[in-house]
Length: 252
Length: 205
Image (cartoon, rainbow over all chains, first blue to last red; front, side, top):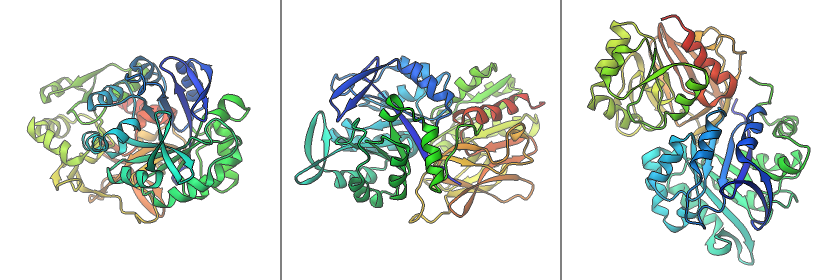
């Protein structure tokens, strides 16, 4: 039976791990390689590593960091941040990423997503959407601003462009640990035919249950693992209690 | 010496790193002639069957691999697309031919697409008792899968281990004599995955 994934997210600013609140306020969390090692020993399902400053600083995520993590962590590694060309994607894959996250470039140049899918296969390309609720419904958030792109339309467009997986981030909930955005999930999940990762607001293992029940394939989180006693395995035990199949840490 | 076939499909970096981590010596074969020195062959790959089939034809990989496996009797282990390419033909993209070392075809996942998502992505358990690559691995261990196509073996002599997605059983591992294949990614499946690679490394030649 296919297990529901719980995915720790490691955000970096180029060098250090950090955690944001609503994509702005930041707190430093140390070294990404050390952190990846800890998650590796916890036998997590997958790791998402995102350089959140790369696009704005017009650079790509650091290849050394990816290579260091990949040479000792044998879990699926999903990487994003400033990837703007086929060559950029190729170099992170060569250093050990399995999947790449496209966000900013997809908004600027949607046809690039289709190119990347053609070259690397759908299974390799994750379309990521940052969303914020506004007076006119959920909009795509990019480069620190709410755009006029409708979140639902954009998700459907990325799906048409052929991504193999989608990641839905709630800017309003990011880092707040105030619970997930179920309204957003209920709107988006039924539309999505590929695996869907939700991220934003999880404070307790129980917060992961409803998104899954609403059709999300995997829940990603960061703050809960940085700031509370809960580990990915605790979250999965809670899912299991709710009859959601998971892969527990002692499974080898 | 284990030789890793690199026909240029997808990323074989993770497989190389896993072999290094296990302390295995390996060589990369970027042209068919390099297979002559191999004692064992590892054939990883991700991407499209049709594209890979074209690459296999272009450089005469097909004859070379078939010769090493069928005449020289060298063990061969295909991973993900590498396993799919062991079969006769594939229907991803245009219909195209595989290595035809195992009889059967590669077809789109036979699941209800309204109810289940494609690709089949994530950790899923494999019921694999009896396959030699699964030695020292607990029954029904979880492995990491990501694929949209599945093999459909047509030879009763092929041993098959399955994983279940929804109500459909997908071949997760195959074996016929000294030819092995897994649909999942052992190089991304933590300890149990590394154990699969270790088992292959330790097989007698």
